[in-house]
Image (cartoon, rainbow, N blue to C red; front, side, top):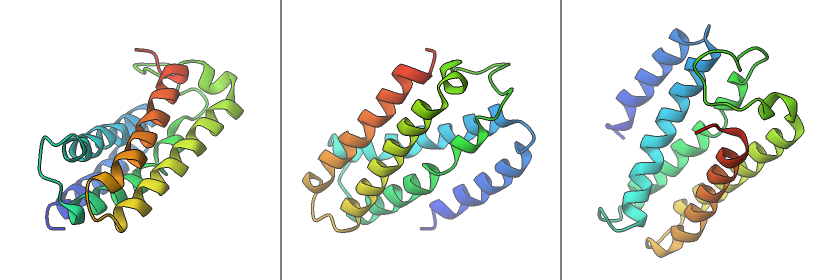
Length: 143
């Protein structure tokens, strides 16, 4: 918990700093995504020891993050230094469907992590969450 508090405070500060720039705001949230998913992935892949309490905290943090970046895909934020594809704005129903599937997968991961006894209990929901990331990137993110 002590490790997450400075991160949360920093993120809160940065979110205010970037509020005027939706591209930077969503990039900042997605940077947190990478860090959080990376930490969970190391446990799932056996690169680091599985700590069920830490994994549950990371999954809960991921659930919070999963609610945030979508608000920053505002009209006009397709211009500038962004990897967002125009389909986000030209196919808003499909984009919303992809984000809803992602949020649901993250919620399932959070639930599984809260009651996990071992890493095996989170492997499938973690993989399912990653698939929603990949699906959205394939359709809505330029590489």
